[in-house]
Image (cartoon, rainbow, N blue to C red; front, side):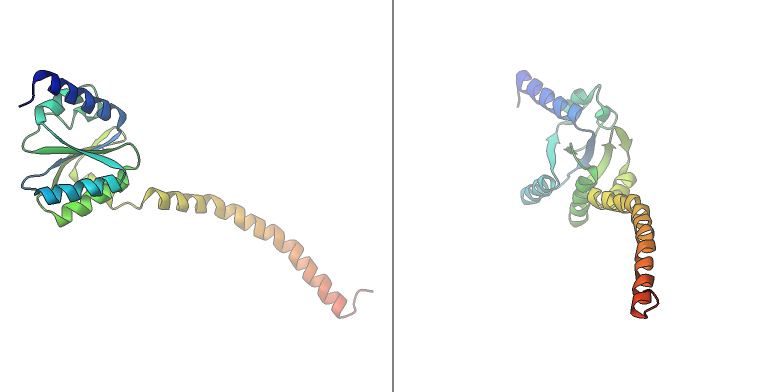
Length: 174
């Protein structure tokens, strides 16, 4: 059993991570074997996230005054948190895929960009395209009108050159 100083250090470390992180998923891991937990941690690291098993009371104390405070209150059962400082979609996709393969791993709630979300919203978030794909589509939409304008402006000169070339070939211009 941990002494008071060790618990204080755990609370401080968790509080620092919760204050920095805007994206957090609270999960349950009942009946998860060690090999499954190892695989879960590997999946979370692959999504550039962090995973931590937390004691409910310590998580509640550490989260006071943070955006995660609402979702880490009055927790029951075995609880863990997965959080990221980057893209929440990648972590949500990774956790959702893992949850499908391991039904004993469940979602309880989440915080994305400082807003509390429920389990349904987590699944909706996981079904979104990745950030890079969204940015690529946005750039295409921004670039398309400019590209069409450049094509139209270039077409006038190109059409004039074709007409002049045809006139020279038919000896209409001397």
